[in-house]
Image 1 (cartoon, rainbow, N blue to C red):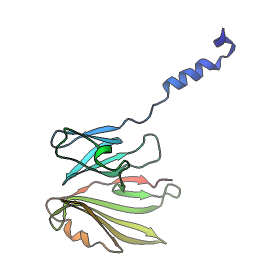
Image 2 (cartoon, rainbow, N blue to C red; image 1 turned 90 degrees about the vertical axis):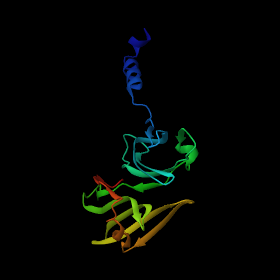
Image 3 (spheres, one colour; image 1 turned 90 degrees about the horizontal axis):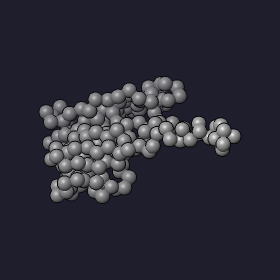
Image 4 (cartoon, one colour; image 1 turned 60 degrees about the vertical axis):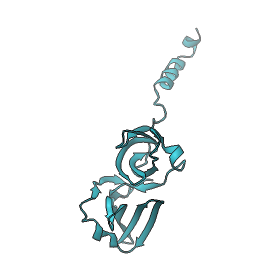
Amino acid sequence: MFLLKYPLIPVLFALILSAPGPARAVEVQLSSGRTLETGLAEARLVAELGAFAVIAGRSCIACDENTSIYLHRISPRDKRVSAGRESPATPERYTYPGDYRDYLSEELVEKTRLFYGQCYEGQAALLWLSEYRVEGDWQKDEFLIVFRDGGMEERYNEGRQPGRLHTGHADCRELPGIDAETEP
């Protein structure tokens, strides 16, 4: 009788039951066979550099967030590795390589390439070579992360890209870029 008196109740109830739940985090398998709990949606392993796993993923589904690069420290002793336990609760988010267009004007505003592996003086590194449109001109920048025994060291070079010289090393690979829009 209640359902007949209020005909929208069954429809609302059905909508609630069919609504997608929260994004489920994806685990990735490391080269050692261990599993890394990333806390990310659509996660995939890009590389393992030193004591770090380089992961591509998103922190949400059905949102305007682009795929990004995340770094997770991995410990050699655990069979299952939890990103939350081994890394900061919210790992740093880095740009995924590709050509980015402004989401409003559709104008190309950024071109980024990402190299990983032995990309800095024979050491494990991540190297971003970026070009940004600034007041109509393109500015070239470089962001480098070198992985050392004690952790990682970051360097930023504005207006130049000296790391480009190291990208020819046989063990320095480029992650293919995507075509994407900037986030609102």
